[in-house]
Length: 384
Image (cartoon, rainbow, N blue to C red; front, side, top):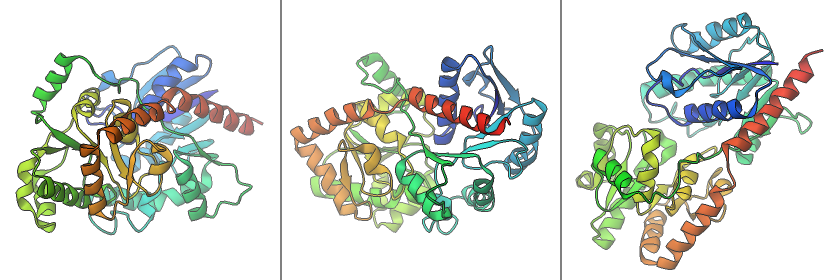
């Protein structure tokens, strides 16, 4: 069996959620499967060290223009030329005419819902991406031999949205994992290195907000503002890779432009530095409006940080009973959660202990094993 894996963005320097999931899958398959052949298709970029060829894993740097033309034309043509039996597209979209059995990882269908940044907010780049997905995904869902999604919640959401009959077994939930380098860091020199590199404050909460409305950045900032007003504590909010101009607009909209003095924007943080930031933070804030899984929650838990997250979508499913659950639409609940965790040492200790235990349930190795079984199933169903 020869499997083509789409890894278009894996060589870019600033990798994000879906890129990291695809990378972890490939890394685990390289350890797990020495029998089948793989071809990973990547767009040329700077970070070529992120992925290495092995005896049965070939990497093809494939040109072909911008994302839509690369995916719709260059990718299926190259996969066919390599003699592949199956094409696995890892990031929500795929060729409408793949020319071979197709597996697609459909992380979510948020861009098809009312919360979509296509309707409100987000950058123009995000809007274009959502418009492309809105056009392509319904066609891809019809063509796919298997559709992998990342939680039971998302599986049910996709099933209902597209009207899958109960007898259709193409849609499968396979949980994401959490990488082993996310763990409690005891090395003071490493903590100090990361602290100095990003100029982190002595005390801070950590929030992975961005311009996507689902991240609930205005609500989180409003909650943090109210926390400072109520307590007078000298604590900061650390945010990654966020534009100051966008932040200023949001702070003005919530009526507290001066809050910018208590927020640190680090810029992009490499994945290997994230464990130290989770270790240094006092609370990890993840009160999103909508998530298909929520890997950062597990990363924070694995590092021993107490987590505040939402009662919506997949977040209760993934966090189990190991996070403080709030209604993300009510900033006052987020504020209350912060205050309780800060004031109640027993609650803090309980959340940390439960979080460490919950994170152990998820691994990339298990994810890769399940995906490999799906490859075999699709291959066997199509070889005759």
